[in-house]
Each structure stands twice: as C-alpha cells, then as structure tokens.
Image (cartoon, rainbow, N blue to C red; front, side):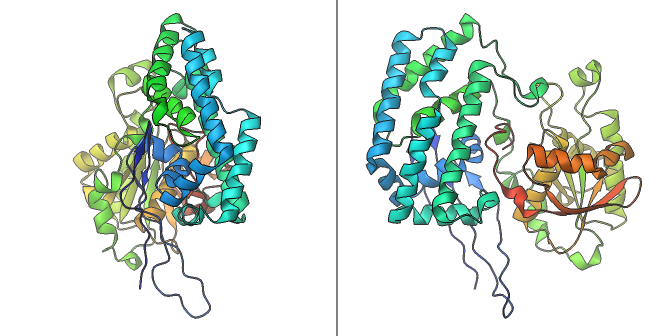
Length: 434
C-alpha cells in the first residue's frame, strides 16, 4: 500500500511563510523481492513560493513543531537571534541611507555560520529534528547530499541556505554581479541615496516586527525576501503551483498515457531567446522560437512523443513581460493543433542548463516514466552545443552535476537523453530559478 507524508497546515513567522510539503514522498508500490522500491516525487506546494523554493531548509524546519521548539530552545541559536535583533535596531539608528551598512547587519559571517552548524548538529544528536530531517530527505530537494549521515546532511543544508541568503543580500542589496548580470542583476542603483532610503525604510519595518521573531534565521531570511521584492524578483513564484494551473491538463493526463505506444516520453524544447532590440521590445517569441516549436509539434503528431515540454522564463531582456514557455505553448495550440493536455510548461528556466534540469524535475515530479528515453528537439546549432562535452562541463561547473544520465545525438533536430534525479536538488544560489 502506498504511503505519503504531508505536513498539513503550517504556521507563519515574520516574513517566513513555511512550506506546505504536499510532496514529501515515501515509496509507493511494494518492491519486487530483493529490490528497493523507487521513490515517488510529487509536485511541491509552498505557502510563499519564492521563500519555499529558494530556502526549503528553513521552510521544512518551520513546518515541524518539534524542530521549531528545539531550535528556539537552543542557547546558541537564541543568542544569535538576539544579536540579529540588536543589529537591526542598530542599523536603523546608524546606517541611514547607506544600503551596505544595512546589508552588513544581517549578512551571515563565517563564524556565525559555523556556530549555527554546530548547534544544528547538536539538535540532530538529540533527535529533535528527526522528523524534519526525514522530510528533507524524502522531498528530493536535498538529494545531492543524500549519502551523508544526518548530522552532516543537516549541516550541509544549512550551509547551502546561508550561502543563498548571503548571495541575495550581496546581489540585491550591494549590487554585486550575479553569474548572468545581463538578466539577473539588481534592478536599481545600489549606491544611490534613493535605494538606500528604501532599504533603510525596509529595515525600520523589520525592527517593528523584531519582537515577534522566534527563530535564528528569520531576520536575515526576511531581509533577503524583502530585497527580492524590492527588485521585482518574484520570477521563481510565477505560475506556481503549475500542476494545479498552467500544467493541470497535462498533469492529469499523464497517469492515463499508454507509454508503450511511444518510443520517447517527452520532447523538450529549450528556449531560443530574443536577439535584437525590436524583438525584445515588441515580441514574446523569437523567429527561431517559432521554428523549433514546429519541430516538437511534428514529433507529437507523428506519435513519437505524447508530451512536449516547453522551457523558457522571463529573460532577454531583463524584466521582460513575456515568459517564453508560455508563448511557445500558446503558439503550439493555436498554430499547430497541439492540445493543452499534451504540453507542459517550464516558465522559470533562464539558461540551457536549467532548461534541461527543470524538465528533468518536472518529469520526476509529474510521474513521467524514467525507464524510457526522452528527446530534446531544437535547431541544429543549439543541439550542437547541448551534445558537446563543453555542455557537460558547464553543467558540472554551474549546477554541480549533469541533469541527464545519458545523451545521444540522433539527428539534426533530435537528441536522446534520460533525466538525472540529482536535478531535484534546490539551488538557493540561483534565487530567480532555484
């Protein structure tokens, strides 16, 4: 009999709105004798999608009563929380319109990160966070570190979350350059007095709510989430939860597909972007984008695949009003007769690496079989790049793994691949598409 774990109703604390973990998963069907059952990963639903998707570590802890109580009772973590309260009050009094001063007050130092790590490991040793740790493991969001014992597993999750918070503060508080500054950078002049005044006002609002904080992570996390809002950087939350909205028809149909009738499970169409200024200002899809969706539509109509995944977010230019995946879906339906139930959108990916990673995530969470190959269908020049060893190296450099287990070029417009479960790993260093 299948078993599934959920957290039920969650509690709010300051700016942190915790996760509603409808997707913490246990194995479904009984395994064959001697075999381990494959885990099932369902779609995640968060009360606050930006917070939950970027920082699931904090959300899982906040959703677990025993973990909340243990963290609030830790002398080390209580002292760190009080220090952050004082830092906020001090910044409001002394920093004025100097944004870097406010950022310095809430950035996690290496010493603080180390102290939190030791305190969290102690809570693991007492068993106080056992339930939260189990849900973390079952969610798939921490799968890269799944081989670690519980103490090291929780410690590593904290380190990744702290690095993610610090990255948001650096990029959207100080104006530091992200990996892709043309599309991901701060929306304002971080050095301007006007932005400093906004940040100062933000810190004043936080000071007013400081007495209500109970967990050590709330001040810095709350500031990071506010900075994302100040920069209109809610891309991670748009169209979520997709399985209940934009992807609802396809999600419902997946369980009825006769997969043996098709040689491949899906055709992934990675975004083509917009090149010249006219395209960027006036159109939601590029001329090349129009061509590559036709390639995928043909594979659908010839029964090569039952599903098309279109992938591309709000990029090119920065703050574009168009999500490329949404525009591709619209044209697939209007011009090529592909029904909504055959189209899965990923409106979050910002690069080719995350086109593939996000498609893999959706395949695992939506129940697309993993024992059958998938396709990537696009124009030959883009496919040349995806098929190359350089693309393997880029994934390893930027993601820490390859989002595919294997890949093989089939034709001018087709590449065969199988998704890697490591793609489920959340990435707080990429706050617009974690």
